[in-house]
Image (cartoon, rainbow, N blue to C red):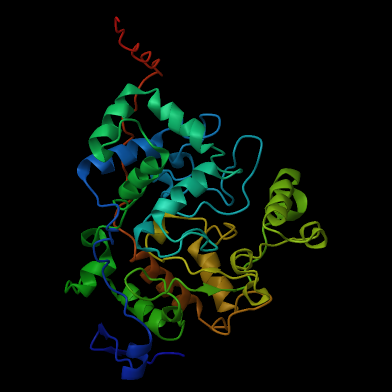
Length: 379
């Protein structure tokens, strides 16, 4: 559905039909992130979670903390097409930014977990990600007196527990969110009509109208969190890089795909791996459009380096793929319209990137004190 929008007296007024306004949730400033009742945020828990996010000892070989794939200076991703893998491996998907992940109800590109509390251990223990073992990581925490004291303060336990570590990481990630006061579009919606320039306002009209972006990228997050197949080109590494091929075939194998499929696969089946429904082959969760200015490359395999490439892809009607979304059609945008659409997309990012300084981590492991000797009694 293409929405009809009108430019009046040099200022943008979105004169959309009532039916269209009802069909798609409006873009708007992000509300405070939802906090689950069973994991309330506290300053102490957030501070502990930040340390755990940077803690290299919560990985298989002490080299893969969360921050290794989610660097603040690289838009809270890792800047590569495919995420770096555990040493000796390569990953097979783009390291999606954790910016505003607090608002997702499904995490990872295929939506395989439904909370940040579940996302953290899945990444830390993933064989081509952190490759950590829960029992080993928990024991490492217990041999660091500073963590023992902090976990006791935050969670009231005698010793650190690994599930509490993930709860702390989740609490910290809920602070990695856009600041509406620094986002031009959010300021515009709140009444600052000078926050967007004329080009960005025309791009906003295209977003809601001719380009049809609002059909999937709606609501404050600029994502309806649904799954669509758009025909994104497969990553060339699946064809010509042996180490990437190893991961690609292994991922297919361990997700239950028959040998005839995994030995010849050149793409990524996405949501199908979760649902096992053939109608979901090639579908991926719609990503948020917030903070695009800082979070390149784009798509589940990082195949597009710039927003211009993304807009060109959709302008041509996407690619050829099984289960392709009927929403993806040629747009016939002019060169100028593409520039204006990109200008608006960039206005969904903060004026400056969100950067968090590295925390100070505990020092070396310390031996645990020996257990107290049982009291002697004389008879």
